[in-house]
Image 1 (tube, rainbow, N blue to C red):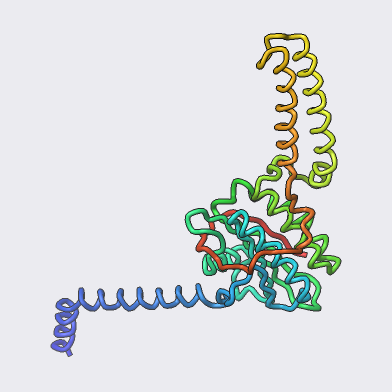
Image 2: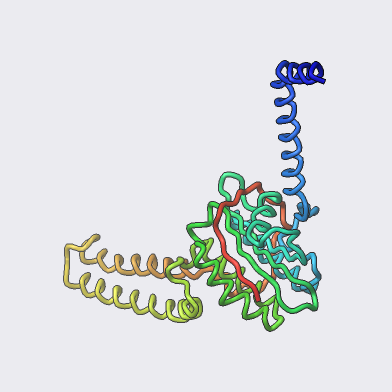
Length: 287
């Protein structure tokens, strides 16, 4: 017995390093397999043909899906920013933020190098009240759509509509706001519970009066100052030139407002995701 124990200890001493190394390699391989399996489990494959609106629950009608798809497709074509709406019934053990991030990475929402994608994730079941929602932003849009605004969009535009069963309305309004923020139609500081509507109504009138005031001042100055650019005769053209420039600038700040986009028209179909990456930006809620 003593002999066998001595031989066993000697064997362990001689081969201990190799055995330890072999065990470590096996553990690493098992860990890698588990990690790869976890990353793929529960996350849908990238849609083929590619689509920006993916309803795996049947929450929206065909017409509602097509209207949202056309709108988001036009936005993607014109700005390169991509917004993917994904509706699922189960998060496969992930929390809503991790699921949205993994999906965005797996699908490559947004453009590689710009990371200008947004995943609007909805977890619910058709005919069953309640669910979760999360807006996940790519690195490139975290400045334009910070976490606090994602939370405000969820609280003010998505959840109130979803509570009433108005899923299309909630997605329509929230994507309009996301597009306006992403394209710089208004800044994060201008966005609030009422600022969206107030901005659209008040800004045109305010711009008009400012332009009118500047025009009057410049006309008076042009008449009283013979040393204006262009002399006495040419001086009168300067205010008109400036007026046209200002008017064009005023229109530009509201041109193509996404809030008025009805989903009509459209390009030739979504061409596919561009390989964007996602960071820690975003926010969500439940109803």
